[in-house]
Image 1 (cartoon, one colour):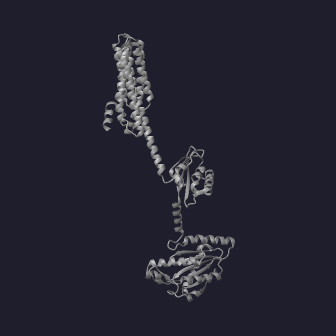
Image 2 (cartoon, helix red, strand yellow):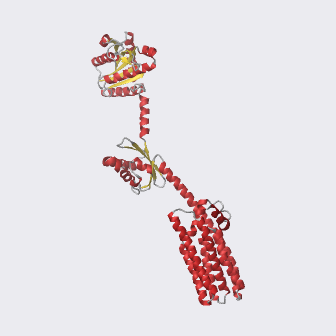
Image 3 (cartoon, one colour):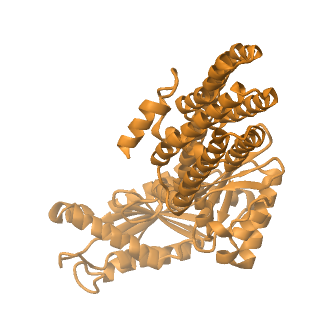
Amino acid sequence: MPGKLTLLDSILATPPSGHHDVTASIRASLLSTLFENTRSLVMSGTAGAFVALVALIRLRQEWAALWLVADLALLAGRLGIVHGYVARNRAEAVHPAPWAVRYAPVSLLYCFALGAGTMACVMSPDSELASLATMVTAGILGGVASRNAALPRLAIAQICLGALPIGVGAALAPRSSAWILIPPLFLYICGMASIVRRHYGSLVALMTAEQKHAELAARFDAALTHMPHGLCTIDDAGKVVIANRRTAELFGATVEMLRLNVPLPEFIGHAGLAKFGETLRRQLVERCTTWLAEERTPLDLPLNDGRRLEMTRNPVPDGSAVIIIEDVTERRLTEAKILHLARHDPLTGLPNRRELSERLGQLLARNAANQAPPLAVMYLDLDGFKQVNDSLGHHAGDEVLAAVAARLRAMLRCGDGELVARIGGDEFAVIVERAAPAMSEALAERVIYRLSEPYLLSTGETVGIGTSIGIAFAVDGDSFERLMRRADAALYDAKTAGKGTFRFAAANGNNETAVAPANRHATRGSGQVA
């Protein structure tokens, strides 16, 4: 095939100057135009055969009969090649170059036969026949200029083979009036050649533009198909015009299930019908309808399979909009995890000092406004924890801290009027609402007793620690820092008093010390291990 294509280019299909950058795919498209519009072939062949028949009838000469036979035979040959290519190409894609090589010589012979027959008519004494033959040949050659412009050298060669013999006939004709045909014939050939070149340039420009458009469309389609987000566009009436495959996947549907040219809420409702059920589907439609009418912020769509979708609308000046649909499940989980880490201790999972400050500040403000029941803060510091860290290492210390947090959680109703937080190192805090002194004392005793029980480490070793507690009750005008300072002062007094104790901090600064009964019964390093 490459050899044939090279031969065709060098002899017949070399593009005019300025068009040497035609790509192989465009060249193939140009060649394929030879095999289109068989109706023009039939019409031109029939017109030529009609002139040959008229010449045979009027002149009754053998050359007219030969012209008629040649015209019909070459017409059949051209039609056979065209239909052969079309049938073969329909079965499997084939390159048109080899078929163009077969078509070119037959078409050249046809034009030569047409020109030779017309030349004979011009040289005959029948002027009417000469005029008819010249007119029909000019029309057929004009069709050649249009139909075969994809191969400009071939088209110009056909025009010359069909027109030049007419000039020769006019020069040799016995009638002196026949000479008048030569000047316009020369202009006709030049005009047809110019038309062929312009038509060829227009074809190349059109096919180049179509190729670029197809490449751009293919890239756009690939981008739409493989982009990680759903994308759909709505027109100025709010109807969905385009939707990609990812949009269907996000709603648990298939591309075939997507319904275009409907309002966006109906589009989403129909896409989610198969997976989400009627209740959630109706909720999605209602939320999307409200969002389109009122809101401009992204629309959050929680789904019943645990995923969360986010829809963002990007308006276009013509009134349409681009809708981006994103699965934000992982992002929301990450954001929640980051927020949790910002407010919680990573080792124990307890709220940190920042969270404690905000929660306690809210409770203090509420208590001041509503005169709520008493609010107490218990400030805990572990006794003997430094020795565990120093003797067994930080890994053992971390195990003990995690175990302390677990015991505190188990003892307290966290979230129901109580909050446990780690505020740094081996220090913990407990917020207790509705905290009467007697209840706080009982709670402090239980905490001291429970945290004094032995701890079994992953290494198999058993360690014992204790705790001291400072308790402060909130009073009018207390802030987080002031309340914590009073609880810390009470803790310091408890530590000074011998550890394993708790002390209440009075609002007037006169603190009372109490030794927890639990401290008298707990034996470190023995007993129940947790």
